[in-house]
Length: 497
Ligand code: FAD
Image (spheres, rainbow, N blue to C red):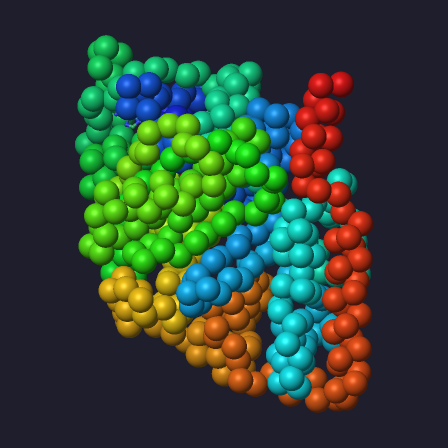
């Protein structure tokens, strides 16, 4: 009987996407079921950025059975409790988008509604003061034990800042130990079956590598998805006009800040990502509104330490591939789309792409229903994140440059207008889906005029005491945390033992 099992998987590309895919597949697919080959070209290299992550990466590592201490050691990682946004709502303002929620859900009413009512009574405390993650981050602190233990508050969580190249290498070793074959070489030709599905790829040295299932992790080139299968790109740059970045690492001479900094600039924004051995910096800008030289000058003038490499320029176009799965090929990583690094969501999208593929893992029939489900799910993910990122640019009150005037006045997607109106009028948002929105909306000055009327059962005095008790609990918990560096040192010590 002819087997319908996928027997040969070929991954083209060995950046973060390629090695995350290879590692997850090696871990979750039975080794005797199929062979996995990954092709990467040292001559082409990887994009080499992508250092700020969101908490889902911890699940990814846990599923792979990776010990946190070893991961921290090998990827020179530090911890991240959220993002500090400087000058976004308006020049001179800042806010913190923490991981985890503010306060706790009480009587089925979201905590930010209590904050809104307290504000309407004249209280002037910042939303951050009710978030363990935000308050710990801003004090440079981090708990020594994992923050999954129940507290009086909604769970709070964390992620990492990583050295992207070191992470890819770490996963490469992991995958190799589990049977993934690595081939170094440049793909110069792609052969297709009569139905256009991919049959094999041909390397520069003439080697032909055939497969049943191909994963396109070739980065912005999208060698299989775009160049071969001609899947069009949906261009979202009219909503996300930044299209370039200049990146440079610098020496790390400051105490560890367990958060990413995103500082708005006149035609974009600048990141600061602390690792153990250096700080990653980059200036994301729109080439319509700023030259490369200006962007580089602004970056170099505002580095927190001496640069340790030459500035590197990257170009991109915000958008996504119309389909992430076409025929027998799935695009994961930059080949499937790129939004904007602002909320550090690219690695998360890689993770979603691999997980969904493993959930819907096909056989050689490649049933269309699986393809459709995959494409619908990835499309939802991209659109949700796209809207969230647009919100940061659009909701700014900045009027000090043509770039910000464009962002403030640009038409936005209808579903985003709907969500902004809902929040602005009522503070309502589906927190299961949009858990992170209140911090950003309020931080960007979309402060709802009304609060949940059910809170009127509380007297002013009751509410004031309730809010004060929350602030006190957060503060005393944060006071008990050591500095974030101690967590890193203690974790690295564990590996040494
Ligand atoms: P790449 O790293 O480009 O890898 C492509 C691979 O394909 C390479 O191995 C290359 O050698 C191979 N390849 C290409 N063509 C061929 C060929 N013909 N033959 C053989 N091999 C080939 N993400 C985050 O999550 N957080 C961030 O903070 C973040 N910041 C970013 C900042 C910027 C400015 C940019 C541009 C991106 C950022 N990202 C971030 C995105 C992140 O960098 C990527 O999602 C991640 O690195 C995955 O890239 P990739 O593996 O898809 O592509």
